[in-house]
Length: 408
Image (cartoon, rainbow, N blue to C red; front, side, top):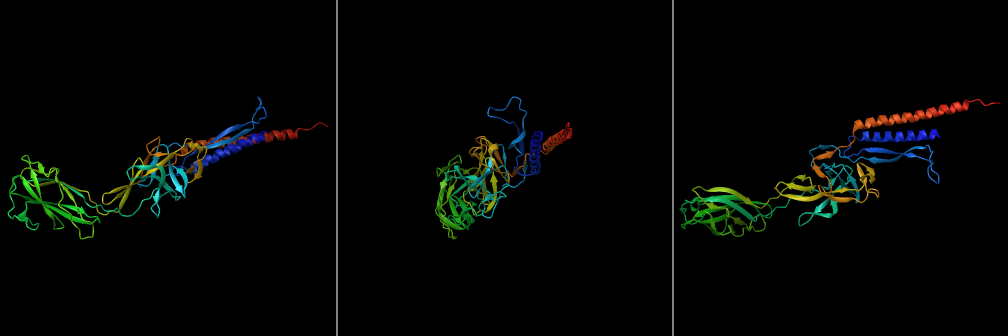
């Protein structure tokens, strides 16, 4: 019987060495979680249980559990490299089959899908039309290289100061080409519905009436609409128009774009001092933009950024957690699959519901402590040698018994 008991000890020590060997081999594997061999004793039992004087039948491997403690986070500089600081798993899909991983080594494939080296697609919550994200289901993250659509200018805000001591222009009839027909001017670049840029110039001419000016608009040198009156109080603040808004009328570009009907707001314009000043000009149009980069914040929100200054939310990384992570089935490639023992996947957003945060431009390293594994290797080796010695000792005892002479 001792042979059998010692043999179970050798098998257990060998299993422990195998686990340690696998841990050390994956010391540099991204997102790898080290394993621990767990053992239980063996006892022969009859119908009424184990006898009080039972010695035992050895040892067996009860389980090989995984240590899901946090690994070190290493900065890579690649925005699509993701790490989870805290609990949770990334969800990836291959043909609809979901897997869960701590390895965030993602990149884009030829279709623009964000995938890991195994071709599995990162799952996110899709953005909704009204803002926010649809957390009821997940979808694959796709980053399109298509240009960002242009936005036609609708509003132009100008903050100016017109000189209070300005004289009436010499020439009464306004002409953009006649500097004697106006006092001051300023320009803004505006965009049509096709993204083409146009130069909008506003001219200001003092009238004979006290504290009153006429404003004229040209776009690409073409006069748009008629003169619009600006009136100021004795304190230099605008009184007309009351809300500061002026619409000179539509301008039809020669590019084939839709007519521009721009609202100019002068509510912050004043009439102080003796110098013309342009303090701020803002407009809400955008030209066509090409993709310049992707940004992912700590809550997992993915934004595409374009050269025209626009940004578009593409989704929010969907994290998953489990009631019993040790019940997950290992699939290789740092992937796990849901099982009955793990429980259903509990999906959520990064930073909420006990889930960790997403670190963009980083990867989680293996949590294997090589020094500790080397110590465990020595322990397992000693156990193997001790059980082997037990077999050798039992063999010597057996040989002694065999050599005992029998009486004639």
